[in-house]
Length: 361
Image: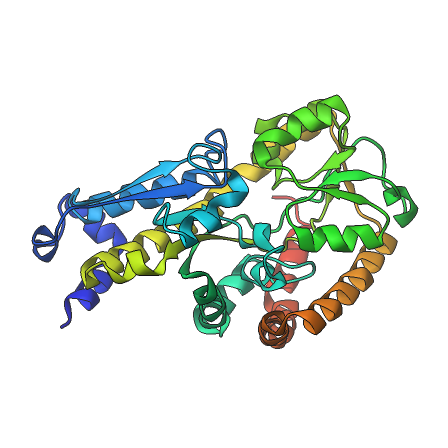
């Protein structure tokens, strides 16, 4: 049996529970890496994914492979982490690919696009479809490769100072949005998109620099205090049905690792990815109930708003296909995969969920 296969088949839990690294790891050299996060330390969910990863790497290597985690702005700006990995300033980063839409629209396809895949579908496309293969072929242009580093699940649609009753209410609205792609869609609806790191959103809302903002969901949003400065909380976040958070790794740094250390990196990333999504799913319901009890007005986007948003999204996607061959190729594969996913989920998953939503437990 190959040593790399042994590490994988042993299982993450088994390696950690053993309290010591496999004997083969003890022969490895000590390695020290730095990881730049795009997120503030205050968000124990999304920033915490990198810490879960780092601790697992250290445990599985018997302390020989250590990766220090640095919050957004500590080593470089939150939106500068891809440049940091590309030029080798850091060996890796933890971020959301759509932040780098301005470099090439195809970045967004590695995370979330409006009316795209949900979290389970995204994992399926990446793991057993062509997603990871296609995205890593694209990321190779930047001297890096990717591993899943988490997912938030479907997000909320954001916090607003005023009600959004129709598309007309978006006109002139200054709204913080997570990526350039949804910004282009919202511009078609009349909004004025703003790009801000998570740690700067509250102050901008409080001062009136922006009129609305989206981040993730109830748990993070409550921690950031958005309900104190914007009373209307809309759903769903149609632009983020299942956004993947990624680890980007400098390819030269990765190639320099032994097979055992590469296997540890992959196992630790898988652990961090599962941990993040399950943590959001466990904590969001509690936070939503607390926000509702604190008089937050939790409201759905109207069918008119959703349909107009879908139409605007399709127009932006078509434009991206005309200017980015990478987008065109990867987007076509994602949509082909999604058609079957939507068909399947319509039967078992949605049928079950819709029934359970009406029951009193």
